[in-house]
Amino acid sequence: MAPFTVIGKRLISRLSLLAACAAAALFLVQCGGGGDATVFVKEPLPYSQDALAPFISADTMGFHYDKHYAGYVNNANRLIRGIGPAGNTPEAVIRMTAGDASRAAIFNNAAQAWNHAYFFKCLKPDGGGAPEGLLAEMIDASFGSFTDFKALFLTAAKDQFGSGWVWLVLDEGRLAVVAGANADTPLAHDLTPLFTVDVWEHAYYLDYQNRRVDFVKTVLDNLANWDFVAAQLEKAIPADEKVAADG
Ligand SMILES: [Fe+2]
Image (cartoon, rainbow, N blue to C red; front, side, top):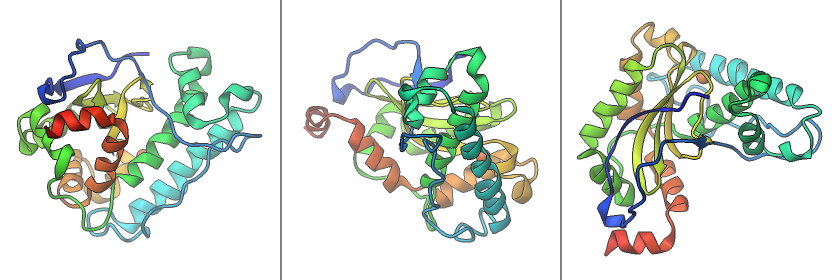
């Protein structure tokens, strides 16, 4: 599969992570149940469908959650029948089908189910603003400033041709903005997802028509759940490296 487009990243010297900038080879995933065709679960929205209005309307969220996301979940469960016990979590299904053209339909639906569940968690009412703590520190170290990060993220959203996703990821101790087409996901490239915005037209067209960048800027300014993102970063950074970063 084609690698993510790496938009920008900078060494985080304070974390003393000296690994060379390896080409991204990813793999993303999500939780799952195992058993027969119920690996993918339609996760509940962490807010009501009208809670993000006026920035994302209840109409948009209703279609996005109940039609698009639900469709990916249902299709993924149907398509993985017979995939075997190794595909007992969404993450395992994604990793075992990434880059396999003969299993593209499984990967596309599995990754879309995972990406959407993650995306919805990246949003909250009264979100946005600037992150704090380690996340803010690593954004500054990686991109120069939060303003620079937002500019990079918006450029990535603008430049993503067609449907896809823009991500903030952790890559060997450094933050990076990456973009991927269609169902591509950090799990398929061994990157740790932190934050994402869905840039498929179904995510914004009812509210923003063709103004994709306005939609993404609105998410960053008003809906981004930096507390959730910071929690993912805390889980991903080993304790000894946090000490180094704080020292
Ligand atoms: Fe979507």
